[in-house]
Image (cartoon, rainbow, N blue to C red; front, top):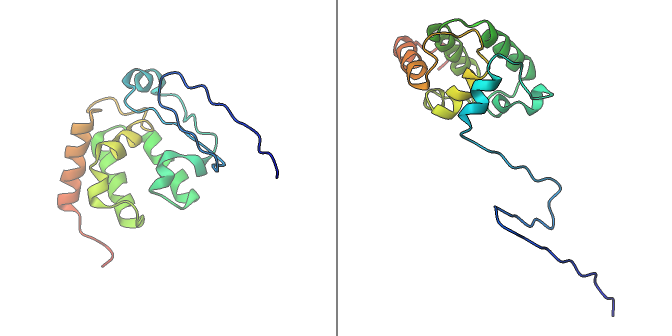
Length: 140
């Protein structure tokens, strides 16, 4: 009979996952406001567009690059809301409901370094809701 190797795990505190068949494990930390303030104005830490957090909503890499460029030049919450309306029109994964969620708005705000006034999530949400109220869908 074949003898199997013995594996010992020593775990001390924290969140631990044992994934014997996994090829990759990732851990994400949310809610670090200090890091967001410190990194505001710096280019994205993401090395490639395919790994960008907004890629969850926008599949087309060229579209994503275009949106990121528009966000980088955005100077008001109203301009940011107009970019979101374009996303709702053109991207199937960006719904009206997702467009006003804090998670989505926070992602957008990290890429709008020139936005000086009205940078709170609630203000941006209000501008997006205003734009959505005026929004007339192009596609059925």
